[in-house]
Image 1 (cartoon, rainbow, N blue to C red):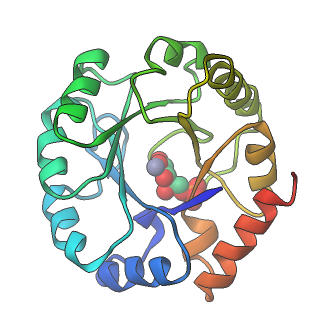
Image 2 (cartoon, rainbow, N blue to C red):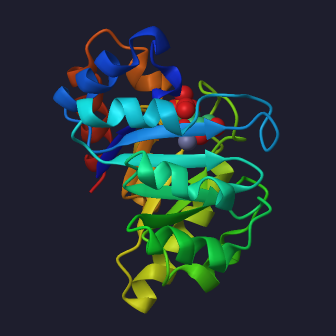
Length: 219
Ligand code: DX5
Ligand code: ZN
């Protein structure tokens, strides 16, 4: 189980130290939430911030684009050092073309679905992506409650990948805590994003270990 702290909940005045602290605490990926104030009703930051962070942190950058035109930003985020770029199927860029553009930049493409989008929408692209992301909250804000009714979507994606012999990662984002991590894990998640549940704790190492233990204890 990979753990990806979402910097959305970090102290942004100390973003570099926060990212480094999560890396030392055992984080596998750093999840960067990019919001344009249009696709979602919130704003975060863009490629220059990721680029400044990149030389300070060794773990892969997992960029989650919550923007209306993701294709317009993939080049800038690749240049800023993204290892994975995940974009929404509900956005306005052509899905296949954008996946290929990301891959062409040497970055792993991921696709994400909002709560109202069925898992089946991802099926035609599963062989082309490295990661499928199931949102378990409405995207836009940290600290929301986990939507348990999203669990069947995670199971469907896990079963689809198994049937086809694909090693696509299945990431779950929104409301992950020690209580909900076991649900996501037993449904088939291989990557857990967590913002409030990690950055809200005083001891990041204990928080990551607690999440990992909660997630893997099910098996
Ligand atoms: C929400 C973001 C999430 C968010 C998760 O739109 O995509 O990555 O930071 O935060 P928590 O874990 O607090 O729900
Ligand atoms: Zn996210």
